[in-house]
Image 1 (cartoon, rainbow, N blue to C red):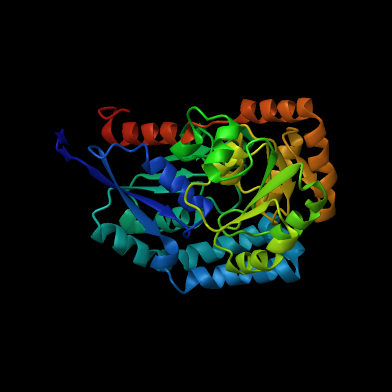
Image 2 (cartoon, rainbow, N blue to C red):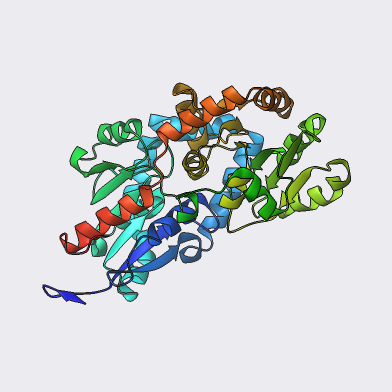
Length: 380
């Protein structure tokens, strides 16, 4: 296919931080709506491009969270730290970006969709990529300091507050589009009834079902959360998504005998099946997890949020009265009991999340990207 000297399909990079992650899930979701005759997606994992950098950042992040979590909030939210970091961006990032630029040029990439701030920064700081269209997709309900305010063709944001934050940082308002956070197709469309969804997973069809999730990495003390719900087992069944947390999987094997009625699930590529089966979701408020929960209209209890992005996502949820928070495993049991015995509260919470859901964000982002790259000649 060719249009006005342009040959199709265009190679478009979808860049994320690591796999598995919410950034990766968002990139996959957008790719599902890119017609292969127009766009050829090229997935770029930054942890593979910079193999030494990724593990270092992840290890440092987890150590800071474990030892001094308040420090991470300080670094994340402090304007002075952000100002100091800007000097680093001007000196280090242009040099560091050369490896990514060489890879994109070698692969013949004509545009980039970034679901992570670092990749957006790297592209905007590289002169060889100055003319490459860059589409930045925010995957949290906030726009933190490290999203670049300039050099981005379009920003796709989850809500008005995030758009206002980008404008305050200097991003042109006409380049900011309110779309929501992209979720995969499996989280959209008609849903089977809960009983049928449970039968398909081998769960008891008539039991109130709680889904515990710690995101793709299975973070948060999910085993203690499951143990806290032990008094309800028999009337309640629990599915725990362990992600790729092998330590949690080993702990679950040892605890299985005392937790009959709890299903521990190792990493699954089809988490939507468990959302369909659930009456209630408990977990870390990662942006993609929240978008998936909203798309499914499942009431949400905040548990073990990480400092930084998830703390801000928690503030967003509480500000809009979209979720309740459990500050410890011991606070989970009374909250779940309340919803178990109050169907009207469960239904009200479900409606509130449904009203804030934007389940077609991936489709809308893909459509906007196609229109921008083809001048309107390639629509969905």
